[in-house]
Image (tube, rainbow, N blue to C red; front, side, top):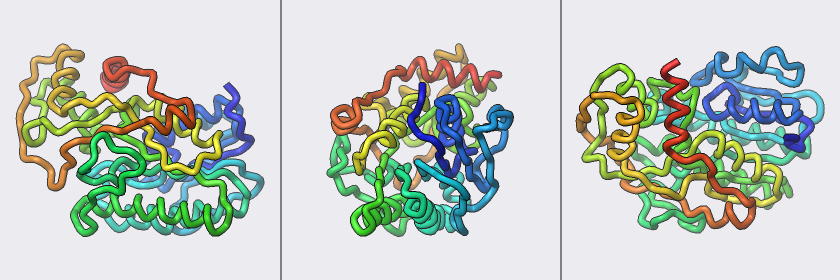
Length: 312
């Protein structure tokens, strides 16, 4: 399917989500410049694209500068450590990606008169007092807590994006992404689905934080990519929630993975993460109405595909 863009720049394109987006764009006859400093990305994620003349990889830190010769129709800014393990390990780099990195990506889009899409996050809602979370909710975030390096970097990135739309007329869109999962997630990144899958495959206990009653809304990566491209193809400014409106407890996800793997691993409860949100579920009314988008892959089907990839 033709994605409708001649040439796109994807920052963070060697990461989990970015590499899937690059693949779909290239398959849709879009030339792609993938920019990544490989802090959390991996060239193995994009190795199948190297042979394609429409794909170019640039190893660079988007927080330092972003210069791309030639025309560009679309800039998608995904560069940022996205898992707690990584953004707690690299807090300053995370803040720079959200601040300076967003400024550099916006400057490129302005120079090229390109559509700009920011990959924001459900974490801007913090530990929400509204449920499910709609785009009108302003969030409940601790600005100096351990998770703030990620939460506030994304909130600031949204403010920068909105300011460029107002002040410069830049064609911007903001996607708030919820709990994406799928192949190419790093097994050591601390997020529940890759952790549970690897533990189950190895016959180790599945470590559920707290009592497991906290909820998440897992969305398979193919659906998230479709949502990003639907926003890119539209002129909607966002923010738009891109996620699965079906809510699952962390304990339920662990039990589903154990069953799908046919594992006899026990479930072990461990200390809860500090400031871990208790509930996470998107209201996707805006995405349905404005973008004609909703997830199509069921959680169980997505888990099966992800388990198969990790097993290989």
